[in-house]
Length: 290
Ligand code: GLU
Image (cartoon, rainbow, N blue to C red):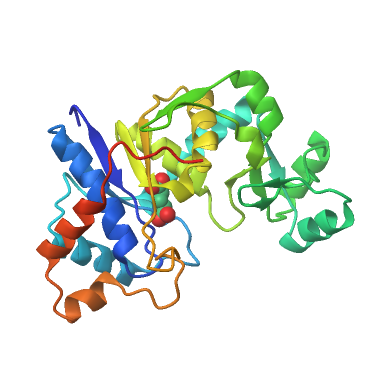
C-alpha cells in the first residue's frame, strides 16, 4: 500500500470495545484521512488464552457503527506467525535472544529474595536467571521439550544497536531507553511471539507511517524502536494520545463496568454525535507521553 500516511487501529479481541478504544480508532482514522492516507485494521490475536472470535466480530460491528471505514483486508496476527518466527530467527542468529525456562513462580521467588530488584514500567525486571546458561544446557533442555520463552538480551542488543531515538508528536525527538524494560520476552511459552515483536514486524510489513495509540503504550515504544534497529525496519512517527478518563480521572479501560460501545448502541446512543463529541477531545499534536 502506497500512501502519504498509513495509520492503523490494532485492538486485541479480548473483550468488547469501549469509549477509549473508539477514541483511539478515531484518532488513527482521522490522522490518516486528514493526509489523504490509509487507515488499516489489524486484529492482535496472538494470545490464545485471552482472544475470542466473537470479540473480533464485535470489533468490526462497533467500528462500522462508528462509521470508521478501514482500507484493505483486516489483518490477523494469528495468521502471520511465520513472519514473527523469521524475525526471531534473525535475532537468534545475531546471538541476541536466549531461551528462558523460568516459571512465573521461579522469577517471583528470585525477585523476592533480592535486596533491591530493579523495576521497569511493567513491574520488576526479569532477574536474568537464564541469561548465563551454557549453550549445551540450553540445547539439552530444548531437546528435552522443556517449555521456554525467548528473551532479548537487552544489554547486548543495545550495545549492537547504539543510540536510538524516535519522533513523537508533541514530544519531539525521544531518546530510546529500552534498558528500562530489562530482558523482554519476544516469544512466549504459550505463543510463538509476543506483543513487542509482532507489533514491530507488522507495522513495518504493513508500511505504517503513523502509529497512533494510547499513551499507556508509550514505554513500549522504547523496545519497538530497538527491534526496528536490530531488524533493519523503518521507523514510523508515533502519536501517543491521552487516555480518556471519567469524571473522577479514572481511566475508562480500567474502570469496572465501563460501558461498552455495544451497550451504548443498544441504549440508542447516536454514533454520529458520539464521534463528534470525541473529536472535540482531540488536541493534535498529542502532548507526547512519558
Ligand atoms: N493490541 C494493543 C492493545 O489492544 C495495541 C497495540 C498498539 O497499538 O500498538 O492494547
